[in-house]
Length: 94
Image (cartoon, helix red, strand yellow):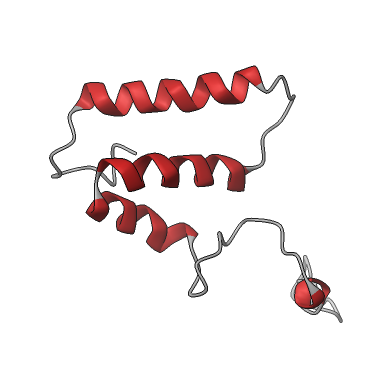
């Protein structure tokens, strides 16, 4: 959040407060692990309220052309249409 807010009129205390709020919400969920897309989604929600430019900077890395998080699980008919990438260069499927 600090990186995308660099040079923007968002003070450090506000960023710390927002990060702690996100952390508290995730801790309160009592889950052992949190998917990265869920964290990115929460950061996007906070940045949307704080600063439009910072929001767009962060979204450029995490949101696709359709407005969906790139790391979020896909749903719908086309969710399984994408080929699985192979681990090695000579994998037949990848």
